[in-house]
Amino acid sequence: MKKILLAFTVLLAFGTSYGQGSLTPGKAQLNLGLGFSSWGVPVYLGIDYGASRDITVGGELSVRSYREDWRGNHDYYKSTITGISGNVNYHFNRVLEIPKDFDFYAGLNVGFYVWSLPAAYDGTHSSGLGLGGQVGGRYYFTNKFGLNLEFGGNNAFGNGKIGVTFKL
Image 1: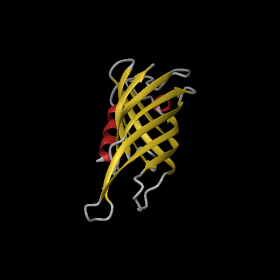
Image 2: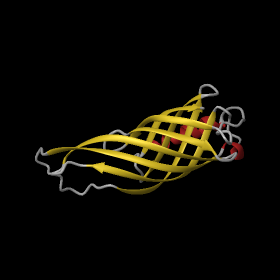
Image 3: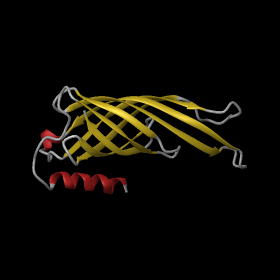
Image 4: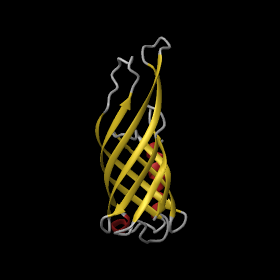
């Protein structure tokens, strides 16, 4: 399913007129939405800054709750996972002549997540550092508002996310 969504996004990007949809250097955009994860549904808030014509740097914060039967005998516990990360993305709009309504990017992220667990928990989950990669795209409905879909992994946000973007 992930490959189909990514392929669809790329095909749409190449099927219309050419332009520049990535973030302007010196400008920022706000991102918020929901993540995909097997450990609850992360809610995230992030900001990206246009560092150069094709590169953005950003930061994100996510929070999620998770409930698990960790002993298999209906002994449930609830935990909260808070993640903070930084990212760097390369935007392919200029080099691939992607239409201005679209933004296609890939990059790396590093983050730390804090797993808040009940005192009685003796399982294997713990806080930690994650290094991951991501590939994503945006479709802008207006000059300031768009929809974002991103896939990645090995970070505080799970396997991907979907949300909205507001250019500031």
